[in-house]
Image (cartoon, rainbow, N blue to C red):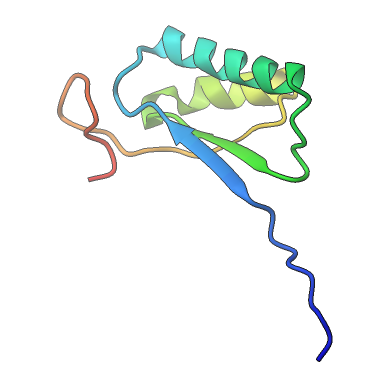
Length: 89
């Protein structure tokens, strides 16, 4: 039987729920991207995704696209709580 190569790229994803404010969230994205670049992360081997709260999505999109960061992004839902681990319920 012929061996088939797995063509799926592993995905490492993270979020910060409702624990960071808008400015802290965008700083986290910058630090993550710069840190991965400094460590010479192979983005072709492992894709890295960030999932900010929906209210921060546009700023993260602008940052990632504008600075041509090698991150992908998605969104979390919102919560009635002011902070904490309440999204995605």
